[in-house]
Figure 1 (cartoon, helix red, strand yellow):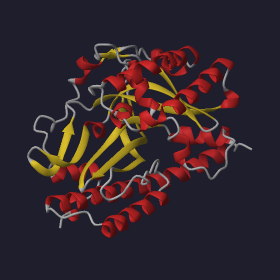
Figure 2 (figure 1 turned 90 degrees about the horizontal axis):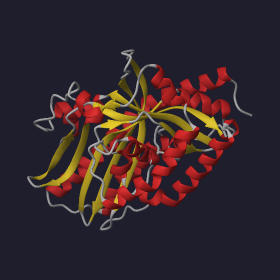
Figure 3 (figure 1 turned 180 degrees about the horizontal axis):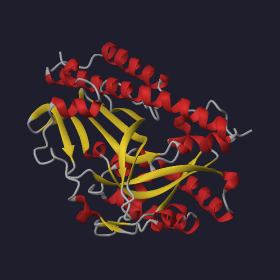
Length: 357
């Protein structure tokens, strides 16, 4: 039986404490692992099997013990073959929500941090970034209250189910010139129901940085892709609706969302830049085809799910010109695009000098 409101809130608070306490630890471990591989490459040393696997096993255990871990794919890891360590964790971020009515507010929510480490033929490359997808704590309360699944289900099973579709909604919500976007409703398939929310503009510094480790034209090292603005179009997810609470039209859309995702999951998982890229991300032909294939479903969601944009527009929040507003949210470091230890320390929430040697 679903939990009552009071008990669901209590369990949600307990989950938050676990998530917020452990997500940074997992990120630091994966970053340190990438630094280890980078140092070996720089010194011309091969990545030996025992050293590689022991380190990976420790990271895997940290991820399994971490309630914030969404996805860990180590099955393709093998010396001399392509491999990906892909962790998506939830961590609290300070997010400035914009409202056209000037009723701005600051909230602490969950966001997705992505670590992608690729090893191939003794060489490696890694990327670390925070994706523009946010989760309200209210989701877990409603899931525990309305869901029919076992209480032991991890956050992974709730959030990861339809997450790759979030980027497709963002791409569909942008106008053709990329300068404006629509505050659209979003529905993502989840166990026993859907996660609901929509697209909006937020000011969040964590979204401005993307760190890259690997071989660059100047040699081995750590670089950063720094966006010119902290303003981002995000997918903000606010609540969970069980299948039993959906209307007949919403149910039909949810069924089609699950079918479409199952048919295209492989393509979406293999294209993290499509799923979580910045608004300036240039899509290749295959990615653009995926967006266009998904667009009819995104439009169907707009017909059946209306609460998100209805609430925004009550505040006078209509389509906003992104490029005109972004100039008021400049990232100080963006022009020099340098990666200093102070920037890494701030982003990784640990002293990067301790990882040297």
